[in-house]
Amino acid sequence: MRKTKIFVCCTEQSGENICANILSRLDLNKIQIDGVCGKQSEKYISNKIYDLSEFKSIGFFEIILSVSKYLKMIKFLKNYIIINDYDLIVTIDSPDFNYNLVNKLRKNNYKKKIIHIVAPTVWAWRSYRARKFANIYDEIFLLFNFEKKYFNYQNLNKIFIGHPIFHVKKRKIKENYKYIAFLPGSRQNEVLKLIKYFKHIDEYINKNELNFKIFIPTLPHLVSLIKEFTKEWKTETLISTEISKFDDYYDNVYLSITCSGTASLEIAKRNIPQIVIYKLNYFTEILFKPFVKVKYANIINIISNQMIIPEVVNSNLNERNLLNSFLNLLNNKKNQENQINLINIYLKEIVKEFSPYDVSVDRINKLISLSSKAN
Image 1 (cartoon, one colour):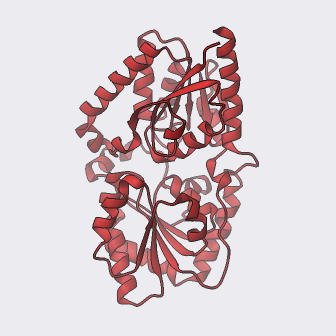
Image 2 (tube, one colour):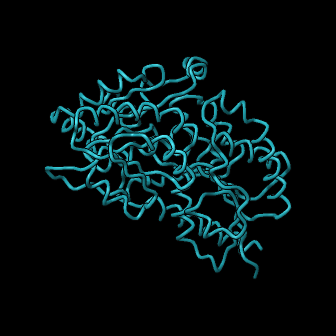
Image 3 (tube, helix red, strand yellow):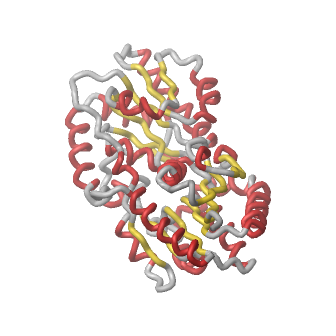
C-alpha cells in the first residue's frame, strides 16, 4: 500500500508553530508530507517548495508591490499539487494566499479533501470571506469557539480545536525581573516598521539608568536584520532564537512591548503586562478603515470590548504616545495587576482544557485513514 501524500501550505510564523506541532505528531512511516513551511516544520517535510521567509509582505499596498511574485508562486504550487496528485491538502493561516491557491485548484477540477487551519478573522472585517471559504474548502479548524456561527454553512465541516496558547507557561511571579521584552513581529516588514519605536524605548531605559536589559525573541531569518538595527543601542540586548530557552527568559521579563498578533496572546498567557503596537502603511489604514468592524486590534480587548491591554497602533503610534504608554505601565503596579487580572478572566473564553494539536491530529488521522481505504 502506498503512503498517503499530504501537501501543507504555511506561509507565516503563527501558522508555522501550529504546523510543526501537528506534523510532529503524525506517523511519518505511513505518510509523505510536502509543501511550504519554515525551519521548525521542514524536518517532517520530504519536499520543501518554499520557506516562509519568502513571504514578507503585510498590508494592502505592500502586497500589491509583490503581487506578481505571489501569483507566480500560486501558479507553481497549483501545478505541483495537481501533477503529484496529493490525497489531502492542509493550508494553515495566511487566508488570502491560501484561498487563492485553493480556488485555483478547485477551478482545475481538484476533487480531493482540502482543510484549512485557523479561520480568517471574518468577525473583525471582510465577513464575505466566510462564504468564499465554504465554497472551496471541505473543513475548517477554528481556534475560537465563537467563530462557528460565522462559518455556518452545511457543506463546510467546522471543528473547534482550541488555541495554541494552551501550551504556553505562565511566568513565575517574583520581586525582581531582568528584562523588558521587545517582540517586533515575525516578518521583515513588521520589524522594519517597528524597530525605530523600540529604539526610542532603549534610549529612555539607558538615559534614565533603569535596571533592565532588553530581550528580543525572534526567528533565524530575522536575526541579522535585528542585530544591524540594534548594534548601536546603549542598553544590553539579548537577541535569541533558542525556543527551548524562551520559558526561562520570559520568567525574567517585567513587561513587554509586543507586535499585535498571536505573540500578544502568548504574552498575555504568560501573565506578563504588555503594550501592543502595530503600524500599517498610512494609505492601507485609510483604505480599509471603513471595513473594520471592531474597535481594537487585540483579541482580548475585542472579546471584552474594553482596552485591557494598551494599544498604540497605526497613526496613533509615535514616539511620544508609545513612551507615555510605556511609563504608565512601567511605573504603575496597579495598572499591571489590573491588566493581568482582567486578562485571566477573558482568557477562559479562549484557552480550553485540551490541546489544539491533539484535536487536529485526531481529525487528520481519520482523513488519512479514509484516504488509505479509498486507495
